[in-house]
Image (cartoon, rainbow, N blue to C red; front, side):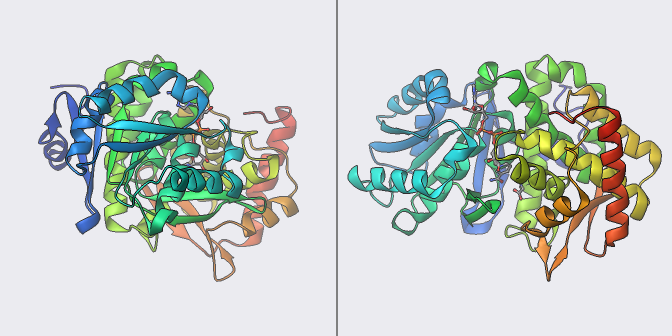
Length: 394
Ligand code: NAD
Ligand code: GLY
């Protein structure tokens, strides 16, 4: 039995093993008429033309990327598409979180118009979560929607942002505040692209991987604890399994709750705190996964206070994050700053902050009844810890 299957339940195993194609695994996000496959494997870009032909018969495709990713991976994608007679035209956005803004979005839309892109011509997002979110929103808006393909190249994008249809740009008052739900038609995860991903970015992506184990997949959490070294060494079997299991969990959640009216909110473990960190420090100062990791630590401490998370389980979460090289300590904001920043988060409903908390590892709940005092205790504890250990840094 392979590493990728040994820890799955019978049902999961069937789901995953039934669908192996040319060495790549294929998962399906079940959304009725908007269902789509996620192809995962080391040579997916070489197959891009064949994959796109299943949904598109034309000869042009548009690619949005950035100079960093394009320099490494555009050639392979271009070659894969040209094998099926599809030529690409490419837009390169700046390589930065700041690219998720109106101006860049508008430039992409202008480029599509000048290039006479037609409504059925696919737009391929080749890059990390920034490119995926920006290009995804452009695809949603262009002529009220053109086909979108997500071709994620960062670990974070491969395990999270490319699946589920959230697209967005930032506003100075809040991250991802302007966007749309817009599902891709296919997701192409070529795991070989990770070989060029800088270490800090790779580790940041591991935070979202831990999240899936913590919120709904205890066996996966156990597996992560045992495989930290293999993951940090980027051993292909371990990385492939982690991506696969993350996408499987995400696909299940999205299929159950596409628009985040319920279960999907669980994907935001650590994000209420994490988004506050990103907003306060300026987008990009801390990487998204780093902010989420520090946020999960605070969520774990709050869970221990109000949700019955056992101390030993809380410590396991912190130990795993530490073993993976993720930050535990949040920046030293005042309570007032935290409250203001978190009050602006999208997870506020009826004026009340919503927190994703853990009752135990592998089981998360959404709570909207957290008193200010409980929150203050956790945040003050974190301030004190920050002072003890020096300035928090990602
Ligand atoms: P990113 O897109 O900025 O990519 C990180 C860095 O890695 C960039 O410099 C990028 O050029 C580079 N890079 C990407 N792939 C590479 C590769 N294979 N080789 C070398 N360099 C590579 O950041 P990210 O962490 O991928 O994504 C973060 C963004 O995703 C945030 O804006 C966040 O809000 C968003 N996000 C969206 C969702 C969603 O559901 N839509 C979920 C989580 C995060
Ligand atoms: N990354 C959170 C979500 O997709 O809902």
